[in-house]
Amino acid sequence: MANAQTINNPCSNPMTLLQAKHKQALADRDSNSRYCTLATLEQNDPSQVRMRTLVMREITKESCLMFVNRRAQKNISDLENTRVEVLFFYPTLMSQFRMRGTLSLLPQKVVETHWQHKPYEAKLLDHFYARFQAQSGSIAGRKDLESGISLLEKEYPDPSSVPFIEDAVGLVVTANYLEVWQGNDSGIHDRQLYTLQKGEWHDQMIVP
Ligand SMILES: Cc1cc2nc3c(=O)[nH]c(=O)nc-3n(C[C@H](O)[C@H](O)[C@H](O)COP(=O)(O)O)c2cc1C
Image (cartoon, helix red, strand yellow):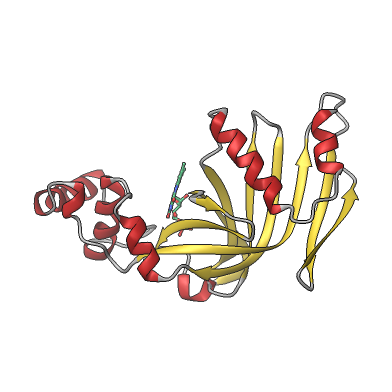
């Protein structure tokens, strides 16, 4: 019941709990530790939810950060200031965090500083979306993808030669709701709901 004690302690800022579990999951090489699931509403049909796995870049005491491309199905300008949900599940810890908050964009100057650490292939894909076909758009086959990428490889033969492209954007979700589900050996798990009201986090236990 050690985990249950952790979450039953009211926390002045539950984001620190998410930070700690994320750190622990990374140290444990949990296969989900680098990822999260972001849920938004479908661009042309707000009655339909759309989810996708994203790399979780950073979790702070207020927010979390992910990188995406502006030319994707998720219409970035429509998403700005909307309320979204981000889900984290760390199987090694049997911990789930459901975070809700408002989406904003990381200043492009900061995105540019992250660009140098972006994997080569991911940089090339950002250029592919701009030059050949947007992310989530249709293509005739794998060959079209590979020929576009190999053209870009010739143009930019190494990672440092790939120029920053403004389509690369950082999504910041500022939390106002965090629900923690903590598994334990008894099979009767624990859930705690934290909501941010007038700048202060309030917590209540909820039925698992
Ligand atoms: C393990 C994994 C990691 C991913 N990481 C990212 C990411 O960091 N950024 C991104 O834009 N898409 C990432 N994707 C692809 C997205 O899940 C999604 O397919 C893509 O962003 C297009 O989403 P959309 O059509 O809803 O715009 C990842 C997929 C997987 C399975």
